[in-house]
Length: 566
Image (cartoon, rainbow, N blue to C red):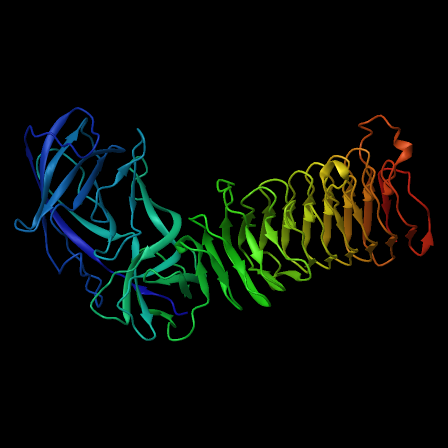
């Protein structure tokens, strides 16, 4: 994308100062000499209609110019179109050889931050006016009543977004800095913050949408929303610098099918379809599903992250059949189940959920339940199918009686071939494997075979549950570890790799293809004697098949922690 040209919107202002007694109500100012300021402005158009050829702007009635002196805000000036000037009072607490500082903050009233000398302005809604933000100093030191002038230089950029087919609807671009903060104690510094959506200026043309952008780093594939629809598009936005004038650098190809789903715009249950990208924070208590056989990318989502919604009988994300989730590089994704007994991400019985990282593997996923459900898998109310993890940076935490990755009730096979995985079971749930079962639970909990062939895997079992294997009173199939670096720690009275308290598992095989495997059995909470359960093998009063490590049938491993390096 080409470098922006210079946005040279600068204004020369002349200030006339005359002493008067009028009090300025728009800013907190210190006691001292009150001076009336008049600022004459050479108009070049209208701020509501920036000249997109030159970047020149002027001002509307009641626009404010903030005045700083001696590291404090000393007043604001109001603009009058009939008088063609800013005017108002400032109060100077002490004189000295210092310049006056002038801030034009978006044409609206800035909000003071507590009792500090900081002020913020929100530029997120630009549908009617361009919120140009500028700064300048007086041409000479302040000496009292007199005439001063300044040149305001923009601390923002003017950028044009071109729409392929045009639209009369509002267009919002995400990933933009939406607030600017100034600090009179640090003159001239404008700090952008609060990444979010900016609604572009409507303008006269349906194919051109202009916006004021604050200084920020480049954003690849920034999500774009058109109108009130939740379906959007993506656009690349280059790095933005002060005083940039950037015509024709972005094209929104809205002539095809939109593939971005902006969660904060959803008001009803939604099923994502193949090749769609989910992004944003879910703002309403609605069910998010993935259609059967669809591949969907998580591009920075937050779904029920604080667990505030508990009334929906569904997982954070519900797969309707076989599904593939890709974790977009550089994004952080948080998914939490809604009602108790539902997992963060659910895959139904008989289906397979595959989770992949992006090309760099830097996409992150944090998945958890609202209790009694797995982070990824099933819940106390619902069984789950097969889980396959091929990459990404994944943290999965189970609720009570549920695995971090696996089941709370029952689940299919679990396969991990890559990525950085941290799985933690809830009370009596395995880190990776089954949840808690037994007659006292009213149901059994089981999972199929567990296979780990790559990645960095850390698994911690809950009370009475293994790190990798079965939860307390639960069951799991064979456990095979043939690659990667694996660290597994059991909960109290449970194996690191194997079965939990009064639980069972199949054969355990660790091959020479691994980098390193470390297993630690849990503490002897019930004082049953730690010699009666193992780091690899059975938990207390549990059972397992044979244990084979490096091609040798070793029997259960008592040493804890136990590390195997081929």
